[in-house]
Length: 188
Image (cartoon, rainbow, N blue to C red; front, side, top):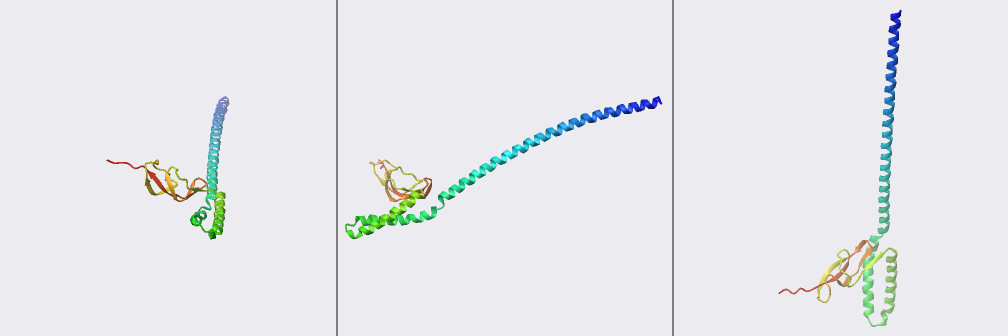
């Protein structure tokens, strides 16, 4: 019986040791899982933060595109108006050069139409490019001729043959056709 008790005592002791080992393995496993859970939660928070930043960027880009579309939606219509404005301005200049009074009423009506069109241009932020003696800028000017002259600095607009137009100070509708100055160079 004593032998059996010794065997049973050893077995019970061994079982207690194994249970202790299993408990420490469980604690270790729980700690590992908690650590992995915390790491996963941090990664999820980081991904959500990155997605929110990306959504913010996309929203800003779309708002910018919408604003640009609203600003320039009438570009084609206004571009078509430009030739009408040119012809009315030419007619007004010709009538002003006439000395007879029969054209006075026509001139008055043409000037009224021009005034209305200019008000529309102001409303839609369309500016006229027609400055003489301005520095030649290939972004807004189209040189159709060069006039050689040593009295005037090079690359200055001497004459505007056809006005240009720009919308919202950024979108060129039509370049101004200009005559540009250039200094004569004496070659010996």
